[in-house]
Image (cartoon, rainbow, N blue to C red; front, side, top):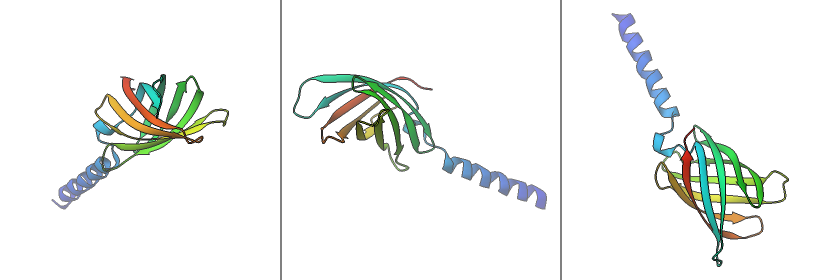
Length: 130
């Protein structure tokens, strides 16, 4: 009887630990995204794509746009769907920060600020989930 109770307790504890370490599915940003971005005060829209991988609350990936290829790293909140992602061009000559929120499993929007104090709005749609 004691072995059964002990086994049940261990199973419950492992289940709780696994549940706490996982990310709710609607907060998962893993996948390929296409996006548009517009600089504040301008009407021209730029486009790009990014591939993101999320492990727990950590986000990594790459972005591709007319300004070059960027390495991405950031995190998503443990409490809600807000996130922060930093991007640094592979040659180190340009960087940006995204602050945003997932609107759904397939869309997010954010503001961006570059190292040159340029800011604007970025909207993205998921192409694929990996």
